[in-house]
Image (cartoon, rainbow over all chains, first blue to last red; front, side, top):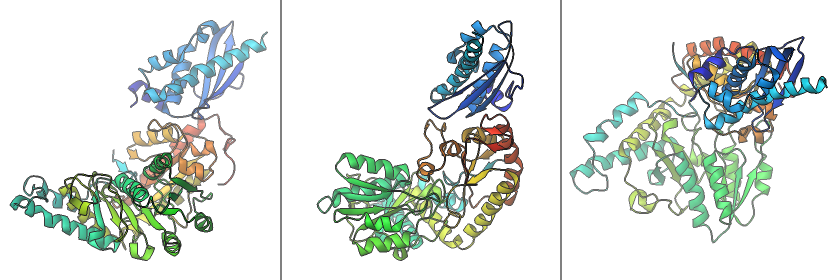
Length: 122
Length: 396
């Protein structure tokens, strides 16, 4: 049911945990199934220097959270805002159709954290 | 890595004695039991033997046994068959909110056809209020449908008391006993049940065979027309090997009824006590007093059930979950919802169902493997902070 990449990121999630000195955090929960992600960002000169996440959810939610952090670390905020759910799912070699909403979680959690950062810096 | 199977409420392995008994009925004794020639008469006695074996397990007359293809067919036949046959007398069915989908979805179908259905609630332990059940009976009530034991939590319903209520009000009583058979004494006389469904593959027979007990004097409209089989109650050529296997499985279940369930129960209790000791904030779902000996349904606060199941599977342990995100069904288990389990907590539910093949070493292994998985998932959960779950409320 899951690709090897999903299983890899699920069993060994990258960048999992909290960040005490985060510049921004964002939390996003799916009303669909209750899965929830919390994203912590360390930002310097509009670059994502470091990123951590915590996720409550199924294997697809955990794997897509982990993959998302790998995809945007070192990227500009502008680039990170362009990350889509489809891109995360594709990078994982696909998700089962009924699990697609789980990958929405990762991109939305990231975008929420960036938005919180930009709002705070206005 | 040794594989451990703790999903016996989903299905069980075919027992060796059952397989052995079935084998001659594929290519040696292959006849159609309805045929009058030698090939047919080779197999018809085997069907009647199986019918007697099933009847012995249920303490009923063999003529009251109808072979079906599965538990769901029995449920459909009992409900639709009664609604149709007793349509003149009434149009009201009483059931519970925690029945198997084969009963609930059939009831919803019947509602579209003018049948009124009362879905009785359960309390937080998953138990029924029998006063409410009795008060729900109206002059238009034609059937009470209450499962013998719940597939998700293992909660056992007071079938004997419900049978007495049904008899007192002269209402037909159907019980889905798919999970109870082989684990409890299922005696249709003691319980005063009029209709009762069983499934072969839950008790060591193969998939594709089931039974509906129909007490004499309770006519049903068949679901499948087209032949005289099963005394016109269920048309279709008999699944001879499956039926033979079902008979042997029932005989074995009866022989082992005083030994195997007790052994399984002590293993289940050891698993339960071990997990409650080793893992903080675990909730057992369902009444501890009225529960099948093999079933353990747990919520692990702060994590999601499917993630836990997948980690267990990687470790070779097969279990199941009624939680969100499994098998394409994204809602919380209707059973836990009816028991008013906190929705977030309900997503962490896992069902471990033991069987006659479960060994003590299997339990040791689960107790070794499961607690660190829960810890790992809690460490990455935003709902788990400083050793407690902010999203879950009390009740541990």
